Length: 222
Image (cartoon, rainbow, N blue to C red; front, side):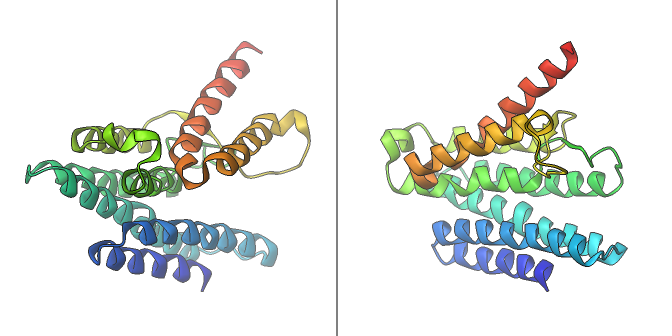
């Protein structure tokens, strides 16, 4: 039920984008992320582990964190250009999200850390863009033109299938030594969200990537 609630958010979000409400669709990505967290937590608490749950989770994530962000980006680019081809670049996000989810389901190396950008992180980055464009956040809407959004789509797509090791936010214990970067990321994220509200979301994802890189550098020197 929790996984299907995630999927329903994705379906409703697609309808909202085509109804002219990309900001509301972005909010459904956040709500879906809560359901995505809860279904995993519920499975662990109830000690339920099944192949159908694993596959259903990926199918739901494909719609909510792959197709929906692509459509949001498609709509944003379409509103900023008369070029009929440029908006279609946004669907690289859906294609590479599908590839990433398929790889994730067959890769047993991603229990301790992620390899490549997780689909929810990509979707979260995109979810902040409608707010920045529509509410003129510090003039950034002038920098986010159609070409820049197309480039962002390509970069996110490549990050999804990259071999970049990224921090997993799953806590096996709560010691500082084993979770220092997780605690730093959460603390910085909370501060950024309190100061800049939803406008901070793309920046939070960038901090997540940078901290993951720093973690790898420090680990390699130990």
